[in-house]
Image 1 (cartoon, helix red, strand yellow):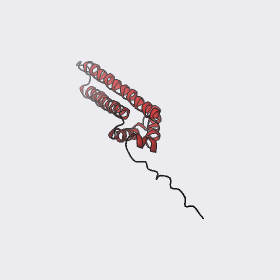
Image 2 (tube, helix red, strand yellow):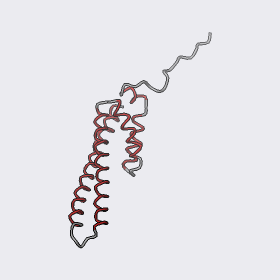
Image 3 (cartoon, rainbow, N blue to C red):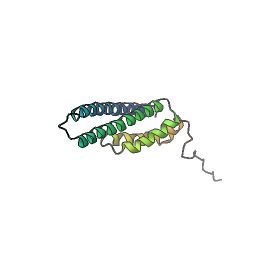
Image 4 (cartoon, rainbow, N blue to C red):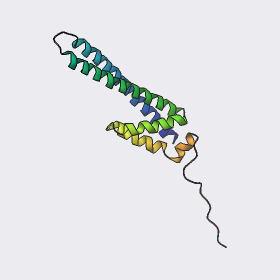
Length: 136
């Protein structure tokens, strides 16, 4: 199970890095659009809407990417808080088809079993095996 948790953590870090890079790319695109719409011939209202759309989407992607990186680092350290955050991010990742969906399903599979619960210092969900009564 250690291998799966480490792979899951690194996949979150890589996915988060892509999110941060996408956010930075949209910020650069917003700056370019703002300078293009600064000319007098451009319509000011539609130009501002486009720039703000780039800024908002870029900010969301950047913050989500940073959260994914932080969650991945926490899973590497086996932080109980990071386990909960990663499960929360897995729900959101299910909407990002196809890689996010696969990552979300893998996160649920890796983090919701008893071996992973023990890795993070949580008690297992299944009760311990009880010996059946012997008949004499």
